[in-house]
Length: 307
Image 1 (cartoon, rainbow, N blue to C red):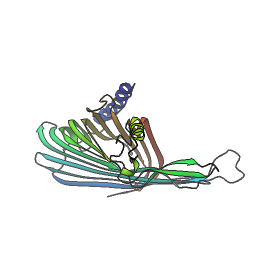
Image 2: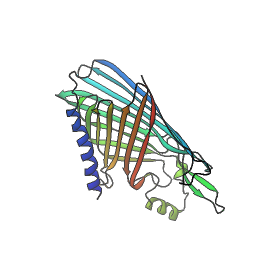
Image 3: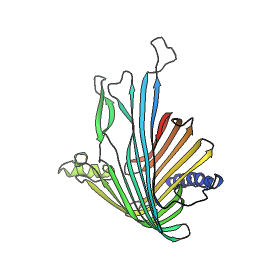
Image 4: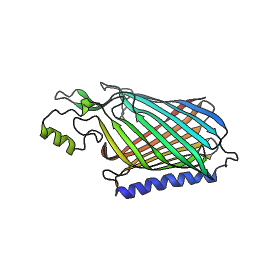
């Protein structure tokens, strides 16, 4: 089943990337020297109902701030692409005791390439991911009051992935990197894995898969495997652009058939220079975190500033 899901995810990305060929082609390759581009967007959602509203519903307010910044370099046969992604969102629902996160991501991607032949480059890549703020699981106490239990925070977990490989790069907007020998480190706060010296507790913790795969009383996990990273951005039609980001990773040391999948689609429908409708869809599969797909979708009116 997992192989089927993996195949479907990869097929979806492939279809989207090949649509690049139908979009207006770039006549010139990447320019020499540094090229920089960034965008800050703020998405806002709000719903309100008065006491007489009979259709049901709860008043709420939500906001999401996102940053995307690219700084790429090209000199002769060398190319160096860097991308920073940062997202943070909150929602407040009337009657709830706590404001809750809707999004939280900090990610750095760096990809170095030296031209081999045609569109192929020898490459080395680095990917770092974590979050900004604490994450909680919410519940209720015996009196019906809302409770929350901290499960994550900044640098817990944090993921560092790197390795050599081969890069196929048509342009800054269309590239695939293949690394058959990639290392992956997972860092966590020891407070989340500390179960003491009780062997039964240690065995039970490890039997549950640990904390993001990190075993009891440890704070790091090492993996070694293969990685595929794909990026494609193109115009579907005038004023409508789609960005696709796909990351696949297979750990050779443990259950290599359980491929980690991280796919993000950003669809931007431009209204004018500062306003747009933004749709973000993200699907993550990582059996060290949870044996199911994590799905995130955000839709809203965006206020954008490009730089």
